[in-house]
Image 1 (cartoon, helix red, strand yellow):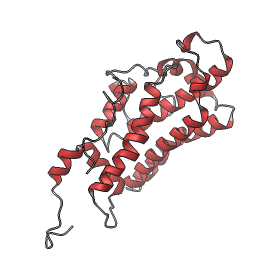
Image 2: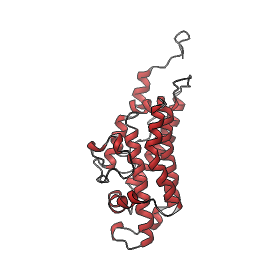
Image 3: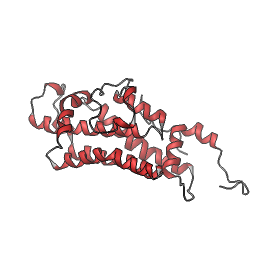
Image 4: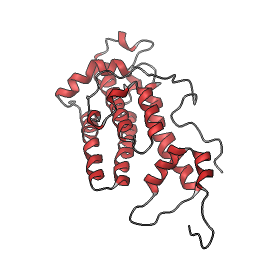
Length: 235
């Protein structure tokens, strides 16, 4: 963009169309501090759909609206065990390490004033969590309608640890995303039921919050109440 050629973007149109938090995210994710960066509506829509709606929003919906499990129940049943020792199986132990390292990795990038790389760590952890959830397949181990009445030992080994680690990734990511997307991060933390007194960097550690898991807002159905609903226009 250059004033001399007149190929500038009206920022107010972009803010009205995509919202403040989406634009903050896009500029942090695709913008450059040291070098120039490309700008186009196509790129904004692509990041919104693939990174925010499908990746972060999709994981949030799958965990909080999943049938057959309870985030609050998982926190109550496995949090203390996770604080004491890593899971035994390789799949859960690997993701346990990813969650534990997330805040440290982000902090190190912020210390270097590289907010973009810090954001990549956060969104990368969300993408890895989606893959982890797909691999763990907790839905295959639940017996409707009430997860809490199950006596299936395999379900207890798979479902609660999986849901806890996914919920912890979302909670920690929500805390770390506050400088980037304050309104959307607050909405995510409300959906997870994180108290406002537990939203500092100090709580961005695995197992640091024992009291979340009951949403403070109406989750709704389908796209109602979704963290990132579909854009009304993608032209």
